[in-house]
Image 1: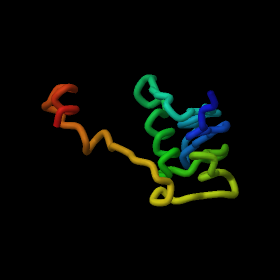
Image 2: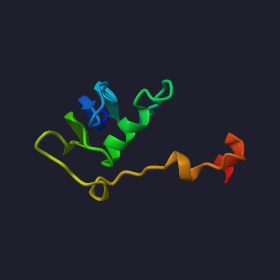
Image 3: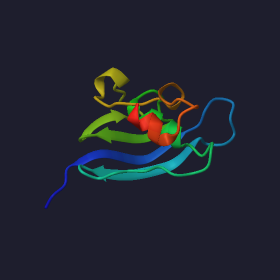
Amino acid sequence: MTHRVILHLDQIDKKFPNQEVFAVNQASLTLNQGDILGLLGPSGCGKTTLLRIIAGFEQPSSGVVELSGQKVASPSDWVPPEHRHTGMVFQDYALFPHLTIGENIAF
């Protein structure tokens, strides 16, 4: 059974101006239709930055992002977020700190 690739990242780097350390360094992955992806790591390791790059809210310093076979970010290509057909739930605005995880999901 062949699975369609819905997300492909190839050596994604992100370095913010005036920062010595990469926020994302050489991240590569392939996600097939039906797969579930979880990004785990300590605070500040680049999880949210990587998600923002995929959604189009940040431009990678180098590397390639493909969504359903379409190149949406590379040194020579850029598709704005409103044309990527992705969704994003912002942590700061979507969660209620006074509710439990279950209560947030139920809401």
